[in-house]
Length: 509
Image 1 (spheres, rainbow, N blue to C red):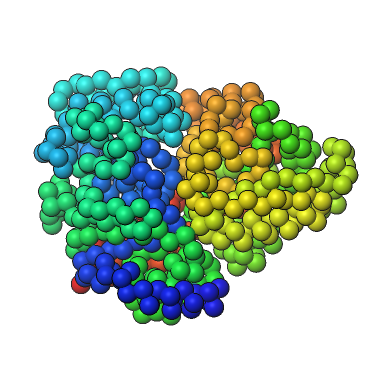
Image 2: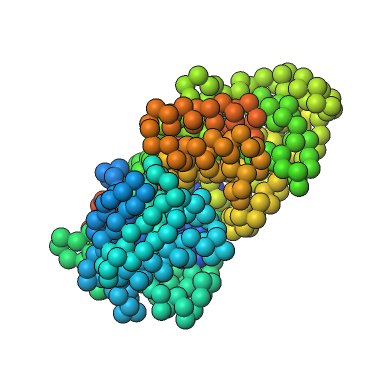
């Protein structure tokens, strides 16, 4: 890794044109894994898209990583006035950067788009509980749900507000490429697959000594850098002020730099192997015994110890983390047992194993290629011969959205920190789900409606037990996200879903 970093370091140092933006004292340059496909946050759930788009287009509320609480943004207050009704009072004096006012009409319009599965399919799970939204007066709305909904506040953090007249004039696709918002930055230039440049919104409502707007930052530059070594090298020489997905092997080198640091964040992301059992994806994986065999064949602890130096954690055979309501302490990971895996394969009719396509991303997650290659080697020892297909991040996300990551793929999912948002990703109707199970669907639906904490816990534990038995995925690991950050940036705090914001962030001279 260090040799690769040094090679990348030399190449970057010779490319003088790449350091122009970073040389501007009031510029912050961010290196992420890929170039955004859209800057409309409700058009995507991928963090690299959301991080960039979210500084232009703002939500009603946000979950502040510094406090762990839901806090006001475009809605300055909210009140549950009935079990299924939330009243939102909007912030006065806010305008979109094209002059349109932030008001109830804009919020109702934004909810209308959010609730339309054809326009915002990525958020269908979040929108499923909403019944209707009504304008109460010019600066307040009421959001009605179909049933009492435990993560009501968290759901509202996902609704991004757009200007209705501009939206009507340009349409969804064009809006994602040239968004107009209320946020602290405005789009200046976008050279696809090269750089995305934003400038400070001088009229931002959060500017001023008491506001939460970023201070000292006149320009944001986003750079797509899929290669880990190049991202580390650019960060160490000062080309980037923020670099995501820093590999474990580079942390020690960065720690020795006087003006650089690595921020470690416990991740919400659950890493897994998709094992599609859908009828439209015929493969040996349709047999539960084969899926269980795949779990026995992968040495999760070896991956954690060797590729992540122990800085990751086993999943205990479930997709809910220990900190989450519904985690079942009675469950454990499938142990590494190649002989058990072979026995199950023989029992399922595959004594000599089989060949299978294995898709994985390159540059989407930290060390995604290395993990995938290690897993392929482990599967080979029990006779499962993986045909490796590497996908660049954009194509990987397209296939994820289209349910084309089949029959087997490496995936990490990091929704908001509520069991409904995590477990609902395996509901039969959801586009990321590669299983259909009516019993699990019923448990998912029940958990979304149950407000009694003990009963809700019991529902999700039953769901975890069912998933453990059915083995729709290989339960791999959770871990930590590592960000390289310049020490000139104060108040920068990423969140466990790999989201980061510039509220309250100061760039020191």
